[in-house]
Image (tube, rainbow, N blue to C red):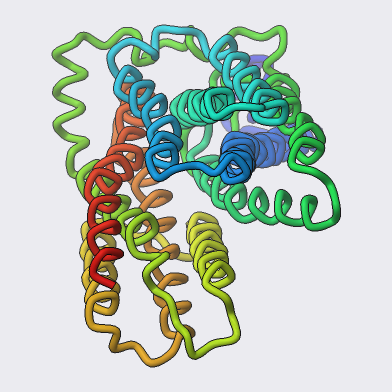
Length: 414
């Protein structure tokens, strides 16, 4: 009895069978597809957040040259977070019905637009428009690419998270380095227009088609070699995607996701309460670092911690993210007490705590989405990823409402 074409065994008769060795070329193709997707999602994470980090730094520089008032600084924070919040609130309601490719194009165009607007800005209003464009790009990109991971092996979540963590560190360093080297903020921003182009190239040319992929772990072999996304059927047509879910099903899934959403909201609330409300107040006079230098070190150590923990999924997986939320709240309480009573003797102790703060935040992010990928069904995974995206932005928004008034109150007391 002859075997089917493409099968791994051929039966010669009823008494025995002969094994046909698997061809080498498809295995190499599978490995190549895995690495293309891994690198693709890492670059997508890097580019999606890189443009936002760099552009926001430049917007603050331009506003500072124009003698920005406190109200204008608060306007920057509002323009920074409000568009992302709106996009993520709409994501589980209907954004998933839009095809992926147009969403990626809009994200790339908005990122490029933010660079151009801020580079040529001569007014606060234009700079704020640049902040809004960057916020739209970052929010839409995060919802889109995290939803897209539902159609790929779960390992890509780790690569995406690592890329987003690297963006904070590399984005801030590149802007600082280029301006310190003598380039103007305008020249620096225009030199980085290649970042949105790299984002589009990573999606359209590097990622392979998600058709017929097994969403299992990295160790599970893929069923066939994939071709680039250009010219292939888009992932939105895959059977079982969230576009087929009823409103009742979505609500049921969302209620189950609260176990993941609430801890991530708490983690981001606590860490951005520290970042927005306490960083400038953690000032040590018994050191050679100026106030501005101390603040920059706090930001850099925080970003380093986030990058390290968002890249740590291979060696450390955490199921109960509630523990991370509790530890982050303890961080907040401890640093708030130090601002009030000033009992820490050395800035290096604060350096360690802030590095630890970043580690907790990054670990909460990557483990939350990895746990969702493991514990949701195939038909619900795309919706679950999009719905959970609201967590970090909601935590940051809530912290801003409380941290900024508290910061002003503590400044008046000092």
